[in-house]
Length: 118
Image 1 (cartoon, rainbow, N blue to C red):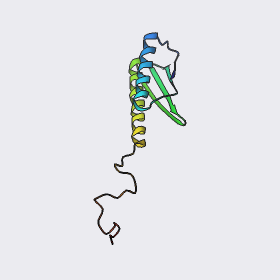
Image 2: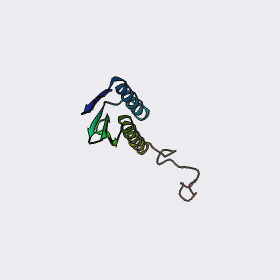
Image 3: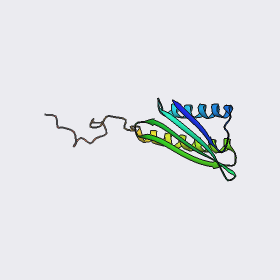
């Protein structure tokens, strides 16, 4: 997975870049087998640090999150939690919750619905 980390009007040191890379890789690996790319943009606006995270996990599947805080680490943490929550909710929607295949007869059905035995 390719990860692009940029800073607008703020510098991002190597240690923080490694932390961002680890967190994004574990978040994407938790819910999707292989992510294509991710972007993290940190921008200083007035007295706040804004974080925009985008992760592309498949054809037409892209997740985004945004957060703002006075500290860069806090801003990233909030944005990463929101991104993970969105991925988790999307993955739950994709899951099939039926225990038996559709159309299969179960023992719970009333006898009037089952075929008569001759």
